[in-house]
Amino acid sequence: MALIDNGNADLVKAISNNVRSIISETIKWQTAEDGISPNADLQDPLAIIDVQGEAFEYTHGERPKYSDVNVLIQVLFTERTPDEIKDKSQEYIHRIRDNIIVDNINTGTLLTASPVSHVFSDSVNVVYDEPIVTINYQMRIHYREAGTC
Amino acid sequence: MTRRETILNKLKDIVEDIPEVSSVQVNKVALPDLDIVGFPAVFIFGGTQDESDKAVIPGQKVWEWEVFLSFWSIDEDMESLFKKIYDKIVANPTLDRTAIDCDLEDVPDVSVIDPERSMVSMSLAFKVIYRHEFGAA
Picture 1 (cartoon, helix red, strand yellow):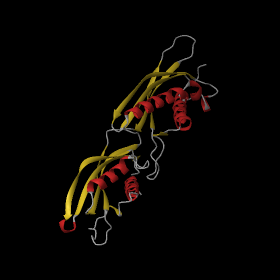
Picture 2 (cartoon, helix red, strand yellow):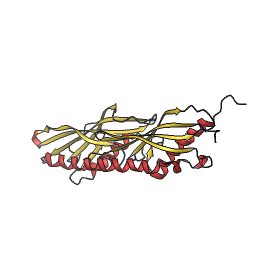
Picture 3 (cartoon, rainbow over the protein chains, first blue to last red):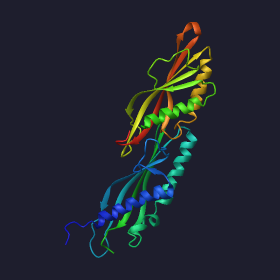
Picture 4 (cartoon, rainbow over the protein chains, first blue to last red):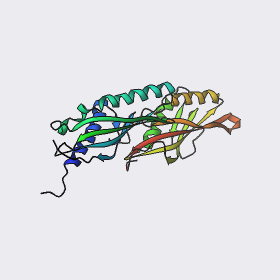
């Protein structure tokens, strides 16, 4: 029997990979993980997916264990016009909210088990440091731990 | 080619697109031959750069870089030429997506180069914010 069980580690990696795929392939934003050659276009906006940790719950009894992955999604874009800052911020916030959802995360290797049961949008704020606007979208992804049913 | 070269070349392309500008040179070290160079002439130089604190992007470096545009002219309305160059650059602040941003930072100054020929120059300092992958300038 293996001393280290990578079940949950692989599970949370798959969750964060799927979040990145949603941003890259569905929303179609460049992410910080994408390589950029010196001649390549710098896309705007740019998304940063920051997995900030987890919260584990202690359970008694028979029910499955659930945990939360804390994810900060930052969206950076360049803008100076007040109306455009407001419009783009609102548009980008709701693109995240509309696309990073349970059904979109439970895909690929997660499709069969479908461990993600909820995405909580804990807070969203917008910071302007001319000319860069940063949206900080803090979310928790609630998942059922590997090996529990 | 570095990201800096890409940016300087893009600035050259943008300024060359102004009909009133006769010649544009990038990072020219030797003194120009005033009898040969076409006027108005624009010289573009890269200056110092510092790491930006405006954005922290994992795996990438974000820089704030001073880029100088010095334009020399004979008996021209320098304010008019300044406006044409300024308008052209700030209308395209990402320099066709080679940079995050480019904006005029310092107030231009006019210097007399050759009073006999009414030759004057004006220098503009732009701040370019750009990013590149860590380890691949």
